[in-house]
Image 1: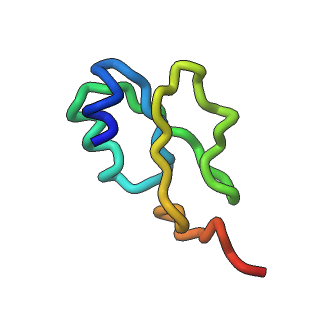
Image 2: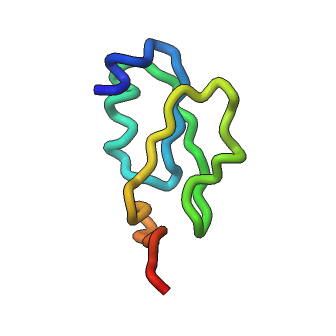
Length: 74
């Protein structure tokens, strides 16, 4: 819904790589540029993002496909 309201064709969206394949579909359908943002043990490496990135799509709590929990209790 956000991509329909706030973004336009050609805007850049950062999506976790590796990540949930279905996360890219709505953005590809709207002809947006997908930036496959790398992930490390703490999640998406935001320092790799372009200043032209309009939206960042991340996996809540557990990163997929690594299944790493980013909020583990100690």
